Length: 227
Image 1: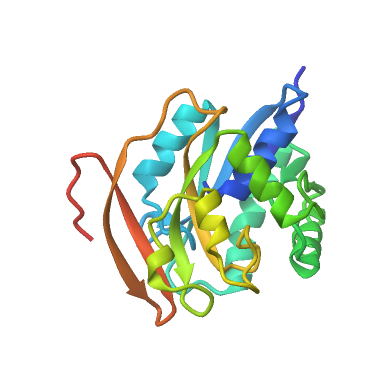
Image 2: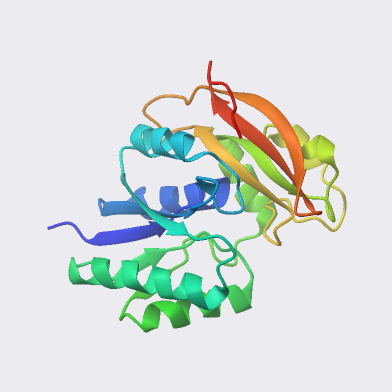
């Protein structure tokens, strides 16, 4: 019987690399766990439409569990919502959650403490590996990602909507982590060795929101943006 594991899934490059590392040698029953803005129907922080997330999970071949976060939810409300979802999966035999964190100690502890409340443990497949090593590995494995969110305090608007490749990495300013581990940018992975087929999408526009973030809106090919 295969071990059951949840993967904290943003749709971006770090969670993709964590997924790759956890399944490259072992066969697990995997469920991708993603938080979605209930109001906007997009992946939290990454800004990717739910419809593209669905297609991504389908191409990867894994079940997707979507956790909807209401508008203006506090951290305690978010934690409470997630606790209920995790408790459900605990009853179904899931004991671990995979995370794509790299070096933020406070975030790691936060995740471990929250999981301990429901008797689960956290797994960090890419923890304490250098950002440069992980960036190179992601690209060399053939994964393709597009930058969907940029923090204007770290990068300018021109970085939004670009493909995450060696050229992109070479142009990242000094002081900005090449994996965006401090929240400098977020991405959406649309192709690579884990995908059954490449995702088809188009760039609609780049918008500035919350007085800080540039979001690159992606739509399915031929779809008209209506929000």
